[in-house]
Image (cartoon, rainbow, N blue to C red; front, side, top):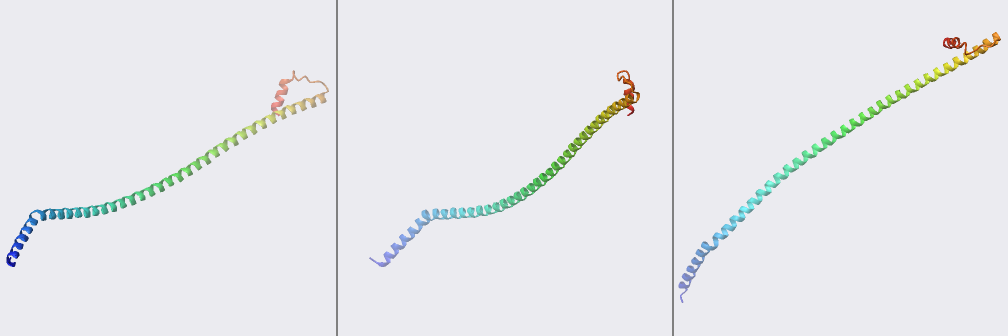
Amino acid sequence: MNINATLIGQAIWFALFIWITMKYVWPPLQKAMADRQAQIAEGLAAAERGKHEQELAAKRSADALREAKEKSAEFVAQAEKRAQQIVEEAKGNAKVEADKIVAGAKAEIEQEVERAKQQLRERVAELAVAGAEKILRKEINASVHADMLGALKQDL
C-alpha cells in the first residue's frame, strides 16, 4: 500500500463526506439556526412590546388613580356640602318649630289673660252688686237686672 493512494482515498472519502453533509445535514442545521434566530428576534420584539405596554399600563393606572383621587375628593366635598345643607335645614326647621311653639304659647297666654279678665269682670260685677245691695239695703234680683249687669261687665 502506498501512502499516496491512502491519502487520495481519504481525500475522496472526505470530499464525499463534505458533499453529503452539505447536501443533507447542513440545510436542516441552517434552517434550525434561522428558525431559532427568528424566534429569538420575535421574543425580543415581544419583550419590547411588553415593556412598552407595561409603560402604557403604568401611565393608565397612574391616570386612573389620579382620577379616582379627584372623584373621591369631589365626593367628599359634595358630602360636606350636603352635611352643611342638612345642618342649615335642621336649624331652619328648629327655628320654625320654635316659632310655632312660641306662637302657641303666646296664644295660650292671651287666652289665659282673657279668661282671667273675664273672671275678674265677673268678680267685680259680683262685688259691685254686693256693694250696691249693701248700700241700697234692698235685694237686687240678678235675673231681672241681667242686661244691666252684662253692660256693667262690658264696661269693666
